Length: 251
Picture 1 (cartoon, rainbow, N blue to C red):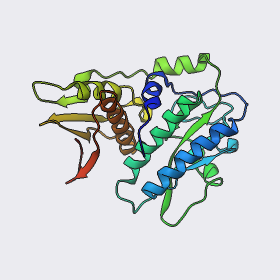
Picture 2 (tube, helix red, strand yellow; picture 1 turned 90 degrees about the vertical axis):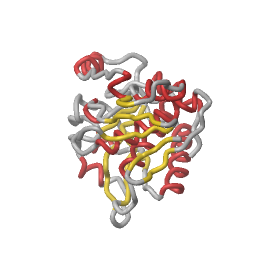
Picture 3 (cartoon, rainbow, N blue to C red; picture 1 turned 60 degrees about the vertical axis):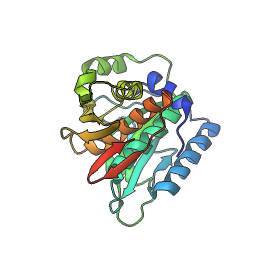
């Protein structure tokens, strides 16, 4: 999957949305999202799916925090439990779909806690050993946040400082690392707990889980890794994440 410059702007503009309009997602936008999903699945052997009309499984329930209203469509993050690091991959690639949707002016919300999981499963095609890890609500929204959304945003504000995220580093911090960490601070996480830390040593960056987060910390790690990579990319630094000896290293 190639990174897109439009995703960098999307990281700045994206807000978690819980109130949707009843208008269907434009078919042209659906096609763009499905093409991205198909490319991801081919390259990773994940089974991410766009569910056009699954409103009985998603709308009107209590998600982790805040009600989801009028949503019809969702992204099902499905992976084979035998795929190495499949949860981190679902987080990384799921966030790329979120940022693509944001660039199309669509609203999204990561949902991993309390939702009608069994109801959502009715809309999904599973292969052997696959599981539904979490979903992403997607659809059209009003331009301004609803009163409910503003309240949820205020109640769940959990900002971390630069040094809370970059927990160890060299004396000199390259600009691509600095911007990458700043974009990690914008990454969504389950219950907004942000359980991920980064270390810089010898011009290599390690991403690591520093605390548990209701079983979704690996998803959170994958999301943040994409944000870091996009931050570095915006500074002209083209690197890749490598998984080696149980660690994620970017160089």
